[in-house]
Length: 234
Image 1: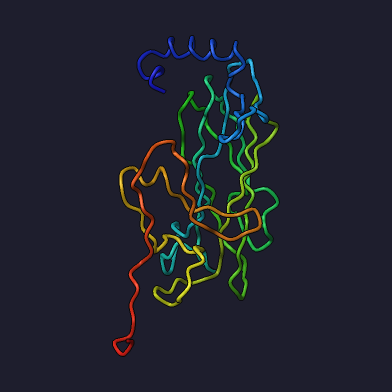
Image 2: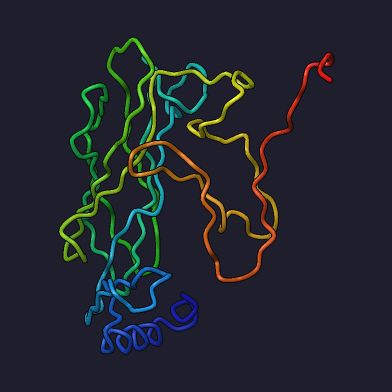
């Protein structure tokens, strides 16, 4: 990124040099703890590489309670950040869709959209309006966001997005925290804590706090909310 910011021509020269050595735009590194490089995937081309960096569902377009959760009669959005991690222009025409959506979801403008062109190492925020059909109870959902890019590294890229619908947030209503609700009541502190801690979901559902091994000493705690005991407690 620094090379491109200073001189795009130098950036292209560097990208071509890496590609000749197998570290092209679609190369995949082995797991970070690997000692035998098993899992590495070489690539010898310089091209675009579209990825979904982040995504969320909220009720921000037309809400009755502004709690971030879509209820019946509200209009929300699926918001996602599309990033070109490659070294070439990502041409207009990449398609982002909610693949095989739950029948409870309604998409006024359809469940897909076409992304604009993206320069190398740049990003854009896209959104799909979303509402829900008449349902009677809280429901957790996992949306599958599918990205299809022309000439991309893979035929398509699927990204799961966990959310829930038809629910209301009630602060301080439980002794337990399963991390389903955002924003979390847990807080992070210390230098660059947002680069270390993140709320993640497991392959079989559920949420947890995850701290990355950033390769350097850090003092970035994740802290629960203060505990409160009744005045009569010993």
